[in-house]
Image (cartoon, rainbow, N blue to C red; front, side, top):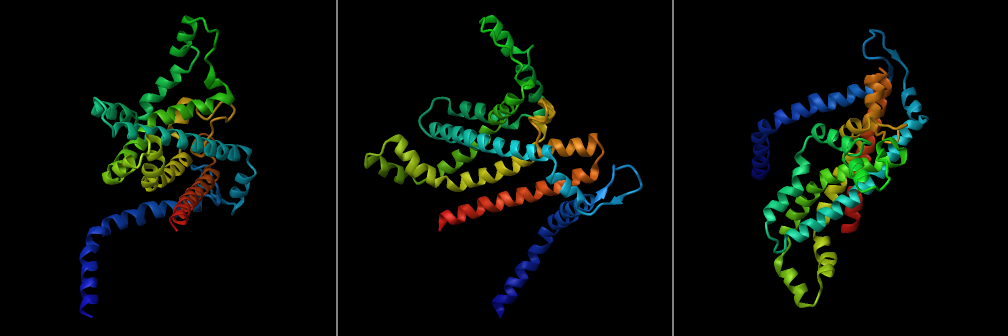
Length: 293
């Protein structure tokens, strides 16, 4: 009985500390989700005082909208390629910098700096870099390669340009997390593998990578959520074009809600985006728990 009273007292003492965060989450985030769902049942341009209720028809419209499915396809391809490449590079960089490398601090800074750059500052640079008047075109002309750099105008190439930009930007995040995870690995385990005759690649595959599994799972969750809400880089570099080749759910929501004033339809896509993000996070978490069993 005394133990229960003590536990209850501890809970009550901690309540004032979490109350502001709880009020913020419940009052802003959850209310916003509820309000967005309410908007998704309306046919409204955001300005007209008349709001027409259309039930769930906006969701039916989304499921029959080829641009919506194109945005989902782009998101899936974007996530798979960027996740694999940037985490592979981050893992390799972390492993290298855990060895005796000169100027290791400088290398860490150089790898991580792109992560803290604002998309609004770097997007114009990449747009110019891959334009027919950019540096790559000048290099091609100087070397007489005969290549016209207009890849941002090519539907088959524009999406991969955005992947290159994203990999360049967020490999530093994967590197930092893997570097921290590798710092927690027992050095005696690594020394034992070395004494047993295991080579570098065998050690990385059999010891280091399994011990970084939780980091990989966390990066997968962040990658799924980040891919679903991708907006700034595609909008600033390609605005979703050409011909919706780089359309993502975020850019499509902006296009429908702000540019075309279809607020109800944009809200419906936002709700579907939230559901996809939650499902992706749950799937990764269950896969992780299944592997642990």
